[in-house]
Length: 310
Image 1 (cartoon, helix red, strand yellow):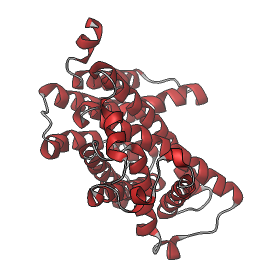
Image 2: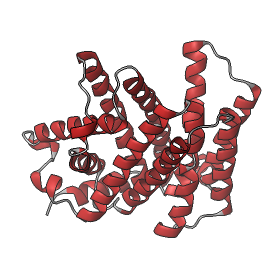
Image 3: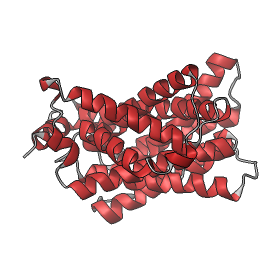
């Protein structure tokens, strides 16, 4: 048997409950920032370098798989052929990986078709889907506070985004589909927390992505310049670190608790606009940011009380 069960249990149980919850929130915030940056890069890859959504996703998977093979030669990495090709609960791990590959490809496609605001508004249905699936598939007790937190976070998102565009039907389908598959991925990763680490998650996404997309690449691959390839490498690094962050967060906390914090990507977008482009947030945007933070806190239940008692 592979060594990942003990590694995964250590990852999930080594911290006290209050500290673990705070770390999970911090990892969700980090993943939201990185995903925001990553999808901005994907829009550049599509618009400036002519890459299709499938090509962007395939390139990322190939690069991660290449690094995985290199890690086989380093004993301390813990990467083995068995962990790559015969992981524990293989169909669940690869099902989660397939869901994330499809989510990434559909999200990149949606962002290439639609304004960022419209794609964001539709894509941020994921936390609501995640909250519902956490109760249905994981047996999590979805308290009124968690539902209220998710709904207040969604309202905050609408205050910031104010979606007024009329995107294409394909764009709507791709964005909502990406959100649904991303929620499913998170649910399965949470189910696998005792037997699969974040490294396993990244490896399986790479394996499944290469297998699924290899044949379509015969038709959808376009030549890349050196600059375009370098941008693809940067996109891969950003998205992979984001993947590690959210995968680890899902091992540390219930999905319905961290779901409202995923709206924080819009707060990051607002801050980046202010810092990089001197675009001051409106009062509505500030109110939306406050709603997102409030929603996240409501979903935590008694976390703040536990922390202040320590």
